[in-house]
Amino acid sequence: MSFSLPYAPEVLILAALVVAVAYTVFGLTGFGSTVIALPVLAHLFSLKFAVPLLLLLDFTAFVIFGARLRKRIHYAEIAWLIPFVLAGMAAGLTLLIRVAEQKLLVVLGVFLLLYAGYGLTRRGVAVPLSRVWCAPIGLAGGALSSLFGTGGVLFAIYNAGRVRDKDALRATNAAMIMISSMVRLLLFGAAGLLAQEGLLVSALVLLPALIGGVWLGNRLHAAVPAIAVVKAVYAVLVLAGLLLLARSLPTL
Figure 1 (spheres, helix red, strand yellow):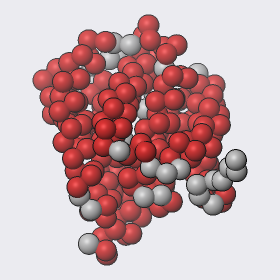
Figure 2: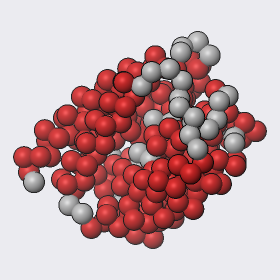
Figure 3: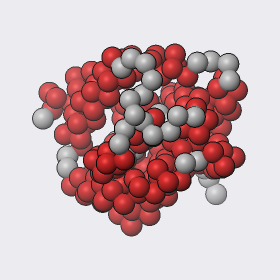
């Protein structure tokens, strides 16, 4: 039985570099892998392929990284978010299946610019948030999770406004990614998105890059200020958002 790569080697090598960087940030902060990786992978793969691919990698990352932090997770905050996240995911999956990819890429580009602008202009510690914010943030985060796998950034904003301990925040962010990944696995499986040719092989090929990134991020967590890394990521996201808009707007 012969084995063949689903994409050209140079495409997979570039994807592996992107995944390694994205999951280094994940190891540092407990979130951010997809919002970093997807804008680049969307230039290499179709959106309907890249989103499930990163879903498989996110699930694997939590198994490697998050399980050992389970004692630090703030389960109460997660419990309040979940009902709204589920409703948002159902809506987001419907849009992912039915809306043209170029329109979705424009939405992703705008989202990246707004999120990066928020991050670059925010000063000081996170603003404390009332629990009533779990409804709009949960709905929006759930929809973005299904559409692009980027809902984790909204969950991180909510958790940062509720959880003050650095390690507990990282653990809670990672746990939300794990839970949303499990739900999306079920939804994407039912929708047939996980049965795409080459998806599982691509995930396996990129697995070493994920493991290396998570390992490096964990090693750097105690030595590198996470805020410095995140600020650099925001600057990259501005460029990524502009590139997506430049690619997608002329085709609408």
